[in-house]
Image (tube, rainbow, N blue to C red; front, side):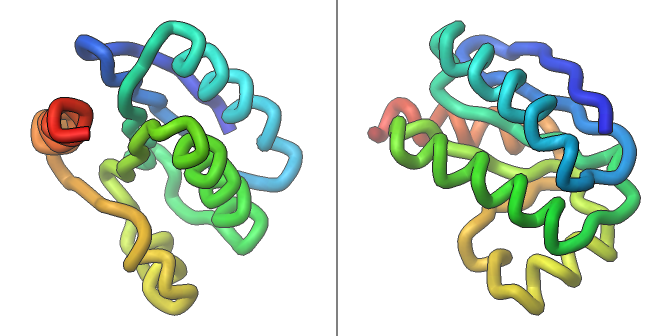
Length: 117
């Protein structure tokens, strides 16, 4: 998996590409840590170029979520493939993650969350 980072205000957008597998954890951890250190108040995980994942990939995303919650930083998912959406549903993680199909809406939701928090 490749991770590239960009920002819109205080929101970091992490664009992921390729399948998420267990040995990719450090790539995402590094990008998340950089976003935290830069003062991001929210993070969008853009999964638009991630066609599928497995339980290890979900564990990586969940670990990222837990890490951010502990720092009071919100995480949302963007452009979730149907196969990943199904995994989120059967694991009930769809009740935890907010999903968006539009980047502007995802960023706006994070900006509003930081204002109300």
